[in-house]
Length: 179
Image 1 (spheres, helix red, strand yellow):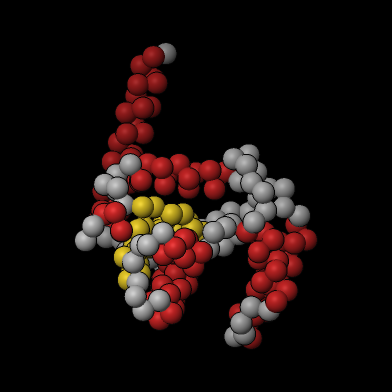
Image 2 (cartoon, helix red, strand yellow):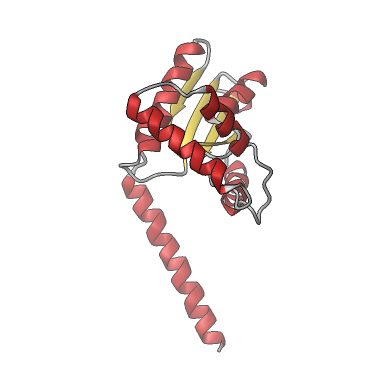
């Protein structure tokens, strides 16, 4: 596999911009709830509201989650040996997973790995929604390999968290010794 044609999509949850009107968000959540309760596809009204909210103008001040995911992506990109990285959001922010994969395909990528920042088991986004989207993409894109790097090895997650705790504790000790 050539890294030049290997793409990665980092999927974050997505956050709501602080300046987006509450009535838009409430209406979207109400429509989503009704749709899921009745097992229906998204209505045109829900599609339009979802688009408006996902594409709401954002800054690091109005959407610190987006800024944070972009910082994680920048750090990850530097470790990918030239593989191309796109960001996607599960909800509330653009681009969607389908849009991010489409962007990579338009650039000639045919081998794409999707990875989520949501790494604990039990969440509907990583365990249900993202796998369903990946499955659908593989059905409609027969010449593209889209795979989902899930589930996370919880031993690695635990190791990462323990190393982070140690770094934090060292920072606290260094701060304490300065006073």
